[in-house]
Image 1 (cartoon, each protein chain N blue to C red):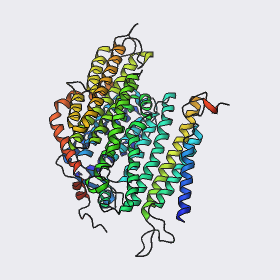
Image 2 (image 1 turned 180 degrees about the horizontal axis):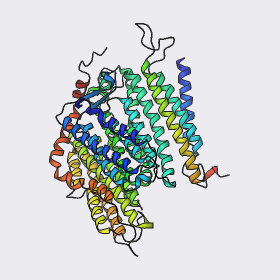
Image 3 (image 1 turned 90 degrees about the horizontal axis):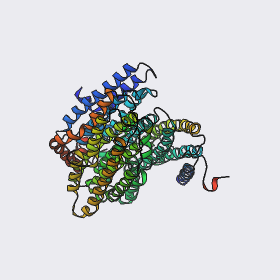
Length: 114
Length: 502
């Protein structure tokens, strides 16, 4: 399970990073969202992965670390609010600048001009 | 009441902000009254906190009475008390200035302003790494909205960069916090310092990775060299009172570097102690050099002030890079000076822009200013202080910092810092002569309101005041640096039964 988890987090991070570095606001927003998913998964694993454990401390038996769960919950809420904000901001930027380039440039230079 | 004093800098603006959001627009007088009243109260709270911390005792406030290291704590020591007071003083100038009309250009200015203060004060007080992240987010969210206050294309485009960069920074922050939690099993900074002392060797690499990632995040907030590109544009396009408040935002990053690396990665961390120092030292010098070039290249007064903020960031980080208590003491003095003066200069730039009509703050020939004499005097005070010329506070701060440099550091720090000062001086004198002397036509603009005069004078008045009070202030910063150099006292105060936590 550990390797599957690690690969998932890694792929999400890679995709998120790639998209964040794009020049249009929409891929950037999607990239940031993917990145925050990856971060949430990563945080979740930091207490160690436990299967079939109690959610909270339940006697001397096996239990899952409750703190990362609380952290992830906080991170999800904040990440969600931030995504909502950045979507609105991207739309405002689109209407103000007349295009969806992150720098608000009208004409692309380089190979993106078609 | 006294025992709850520590939490007041967070709760007071939070409540005020919630009250202010009650009506989105209208009720201007009431809102201004509440906003200014809450900020003035915050100054009093700040003074009370400094008075309490000055004795050297480290006190903490356990939220919900969950004792450290399990609950979230707010920790009050000399450094955090000083930063809270500084924030409040700066905010008072900015909020009074905003009452002249800037607050009505958009909705919810005062509410967001108070919430920004919640985030800043919380970040200064918290003793918990994840809680630090939460307060960073609070202050960032408020700052996104404040940066957009009033709208306009330049602001929106600058905001896109600022928001995206900071969101990426937040992700990195979470990863770093996650790594450190995974490696040490705690989020409380004092507890983490203890655990790092007994860290198994195979986890060392993990902790180093986490610690350096944190440095990247704090560097992004503080605007250190490769991560500063968002700053000039965002600060230059922000509304004046917001830009003035933002003067403390880079200092939040600097505070975080100072706090985390002195407490968590202090002397107790063994081989991991001071792992940030080499990075910070060289990058700060590079930041200084680039910022000096930036001041010379700026064609707009607001952009020039934004680069001066960058100069101050480089100077402060150089103080951290030196690492000795004398350097930390000097940097704290310089921090007080530079926060208030650059904040004041942002406000002043707005006033000059308003009176020059169409030319605005661009450094081109424009109409003469209606109240040019008074503005020019204030500009002179601000410029002399920020460029570090005697007799004002900048010279004192710089001299302290230069004197604190040790033998091997002098050949690097002295030329860079002094040449940057020269660059700032050249840029400011050129800006001043263009703004006040190269003019033609009839004076334009209307007389400025007393609110605006108060805001600017309140902040720029710090320059002579800091010189007059240099003695007691230096005593306080010396004591603060001493306290930071001995993290064991903080750890002792928070976790008395050090080491045998269950």
